[in-house]
Length: 183
Figure 1 (cartoon, rainbow, N blue to C red):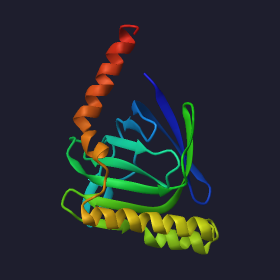
Figure 2 (cartoon, one colour):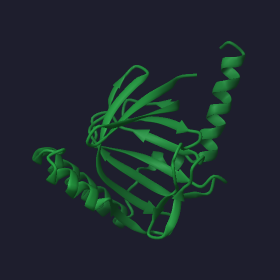
Figure 3 (cartoon, rainbow, N blue to C red):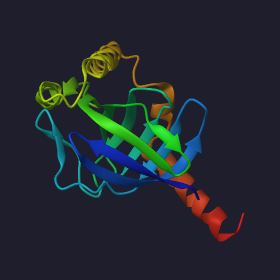
């Protein structure tokens, strides 16, 4: 079973490493499962908890794109919505991936709520010079595009809808069985 370590840089100089299981690889995207989010506190959007510590996330990473997508859940597995991190294109080298968070995020909740998140954090990073002008323009454009597509009902892409939590968990079980059987 293949796993990857995502080295996720947060501006200005923090880094977290996330270990995730690869459940599908395609030329256009890679699907991974984070079985239990290691969070200090819940993620809250518009007054609602959308991701709890210990909850699973199905992630979609796209070579060359300025975002990734996560299907967020509560600890009990309840799906809450889709979250896009706006980030530098992920450098995917074997089992080690690297990216830098560009502060902006896009939320599309199951209740239909769509919002660009962390505007103040983004502005502060730009003001501090942690994000240069071309990068900040690309980040802003990407966030606004994804939010507009979500409001039109044409985002997230179909494969994100197809890889729900139960399918991801079944795939991990199958991979573990294959590993145990030596295949």
